[in-house]
Image 1 (tube, rainbow, N blue to C red):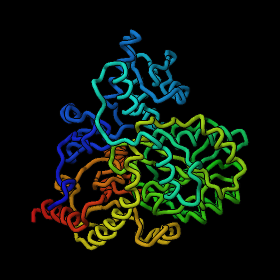
Image 2: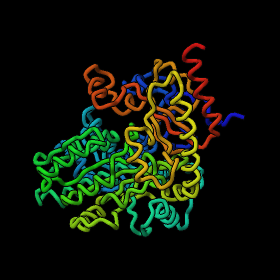
Image 3: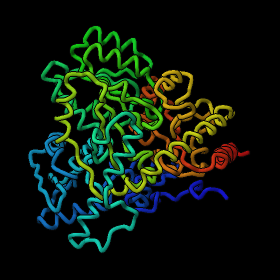
Image 4: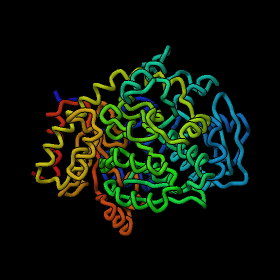
Length: 508
């Protein structure tokens, strides 16, 4: 019997069938473009999506309740987990008429209603990852009588945080469970760390940041949008170009605050020589921030080679696709003199998880190791099939030749690539994508497989123009790249799904 997850899903269908699902089906390229251009016919069928990118129905209802309770009219309302990001939200929106108040354990900010104000506020919540959790909003709505009952789901109610800490300490390796710092999302963890580093290091003249590799979209946006006028970002798109990093540190090392990279990167799944990079940074007193989310900390050991690890717990540990959380770990082996101050500064900046989200993660995290193991096996076999296929021109994955040795230097075990790879086709993307029988949605690290035309969803402003597409190609990114996350389905069935899509797309 074909695994139930290997099928077509209707437009807008949330997966899993939960109001807290982080995945929503966008099954055709026409739907993808309709979603990005906000086509009314497409958007009428999409009521939810990846939480940082959409206004969740439950948080929207919470905002409406707040507006009704406070008699607000003509105001755009934003629901936040706490008041910790209010000053940055106020500055980002840039409105003189900005107000906020706390109600029933949630913070509501509001500005004059306008398309621009609403778009700016939504964008800030996406980048900073501090928008109210859907479970937090659900809890509020039930308590104030706007919701009859909560969604029924399995939650750990006693000792949830301890269960999560124990599992993550094992996954990260060589740390105490108390060393893990939690946040409402992976992006909020990075955003809080970014602000703490700036506060500690900018007064000391360290105002230059280095981005190594093409990183996840909101990591890029934080580095691009939130540095001050006296600060500078240098982008080195090739993760293997440590010579450029070395020259920059030789010339301006005392000005560099931090190097930010992913190990491996998303979506090209490239890995830098992390031990060598760590040595370069240490020599100049530069912080090295590394994110191993793409492959999972269970597959790669980065803490010995960085100062701070950032990890999205939505992936792999939250493997059922319905919880949003993140974490930070300060490396116990780091000797950077500013690290203690940065840790002290970051604690009051992190938006702390809602108990229901932690309880949901605790219910899923015991499967973390098995999910990673099955994904590893699936990727090894599926990529072997794809690399020999006539309709595939290139596969980007952890063991691709361009950075294989670098990945192996931090891999915990052989044949452990993680769930992600990206592929370039020698046939038209649309035909193959439309025929592929699995969930087509953002996110990864779930028990079920997913695929998405990553650059259309993350960088549509670039994909939709000739200049933008040229810039992507210059950075080594094929605009029609298809990113795939392999789940726990039987590998032979997964290969069959890809083979069938190739056959149908080419009319054979």
